[in-house]
Length: 215
Image (cartoon, rainbow, N blue to C red; front, side, top):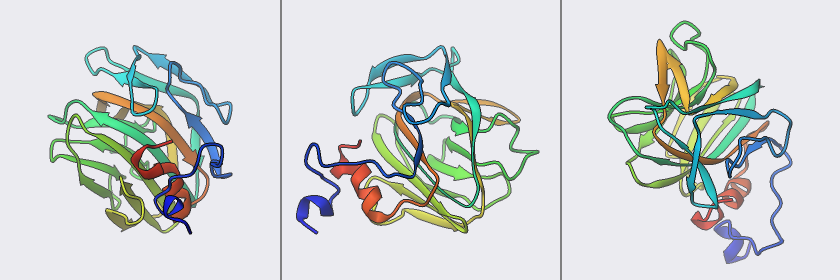
């Protein structure tokens, strides 16, 4: 492997996204699914400069969120990729999840940031993966599951920052909020959300990370 590929940097024209990608939301001026047909509906979304082109900006005072036409549901192996910048961590802020109360639907996956402050992928009663985050910092996040172990990568995708035994299925139908007794709304921007129906390999994670430039 050459040194560029080692760090996920692939010359222009030489990169192909993993064939396992099933949905892609660039959030570059719209909320359309550019790979599948599961488009979103924007609620009070504005757009700001992201790491790559524009990103969807979420304001909890509006509130801002995106609802998907249909539930994204994967059992067994799956992966998620997204780029995020957090404006506020004073309380729990929902990134994405199902439109069901996770307190009573305890197997539902939800992604939040909170005042610890951490970014976490969790179920109400299951094992979670998490790592410390800060405001006004751009993070490239990748979460993978092989069906038995969930792993969290923030930044460099060669080593997981956290892992946990968790057979949780992927279920996403809203972006920018989660439902934990009441809705928890995100504050900041998100872009380039991608869902995959398998666990990404290290080479695939490196390619998406692209040496920190993202895809």
